[in-house]
Length: 576
Image (cartoon, rainbow, N blue to C red; front, side):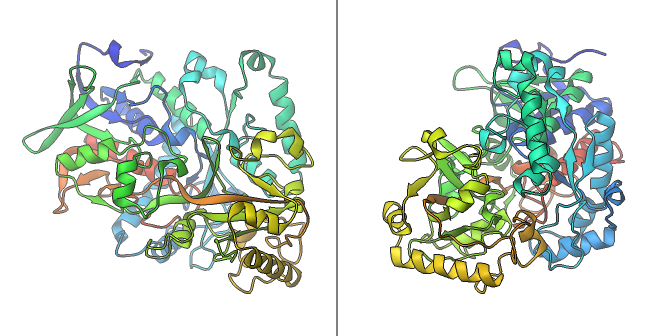
């Protein structure tokens, strides 16, 4: 079989006619390309940036697959009926129709089986509960699935061309852990020290890699997913062309027939797609103009952990050929803090005891342990019209700092403050003070309000009941609490000096709004009709999860499933 190559725009093939052109190089794009090739298509992948992988390579790599074929292996019983009951209760009916939900439920298990055949094995995570425990059909685990790690040496010289997870998502800023491993370490679960120590020793004794640099060659999470998919793409002889931005979609007779590549610095070139163009090029989280036009204010690309190339180019290109859009005011929200020029997303830290989030008055306004996607409406308000909590402030004390990681900063028992001078001060992530009053002064918070909130939190910690917001009252909250803390693993006093704080923003891991699609990933026009030859998946499309986040992996799960269906539809094949 012909071996593919990763090339730049300057090495374009003379023959510019393809069956399918895929725009983007994240997980959905790579799966779509591989599947189209498996149906006999001649496929080209175009990536705007100089590295491939997009948000997928920077993510946890988890996929949410209800009723997946291996869920019974972790002691969970599931069914299509349970999955529909759960999703229908969580996702607003005026956003996503029943048939789209049923399509996802029935196709996602087939998608995960196809990934296995591609050499991308996934396994269910036993104790990773869905995000809405009070809803019928909820499961305590098993629906979120973890990609098997892979040796980066299999990629050879392509490895440096693949994006990697940010330092805050790695142990010691460099060491990769799987979802299963990381969940135990972050939860300070029994055995977490052994997992961490094993990872450190493995990393240190990979002498060949250490001589070349700091990058861990044991690829996990999103890096493993993208690496394995890229290997599958190479095996199929598919070209991935880097530094090749698509400037427009070409159409003939109302049908999308190809793409225009390049421009500005040179003459744009037409690349033809006989069967279809599949857009999986990410959202618009890094576009200041599109954020201002669509998201709640204030907003900034600096608060997003998305890929720098995600500026909504293909969403705009779709509009130019008549595509409708939806959910443009929504994002995959997540609380973020800034560390110099870096954005750090707080996925797990917010659930630990001894931490609280307050506004400028020093008052709590939310359950800090709630799903991170809910932070958008908690900070901006239910109607996205409240700017008073931007920024909010995360507050914790020395007891928290000693026991838990925060934003990639290891516990002070392992990595004291004096070893991390860059983490504090004007360009650091944290502000430190000897008293709560001093911390309030440094951050611009009302000191009396902050003291009252800390006193209240101490009372809640003693009783085990958060009387205001119910923090720690359900299994989702407790997933990343500290089971060694009683009576509530998510509540602890904030009374031991020194005290720490940071400004916290309504950040995101990508936008949710994009091109409207049907269950086969066909892009729809304003009348709801499919635009022939045009497909979309992932954050380039309006999320089929609506404005909700039902469980970990509900970004990649739908993205991969729609890509799986779209590639089959484009090639005129049966989805199965």
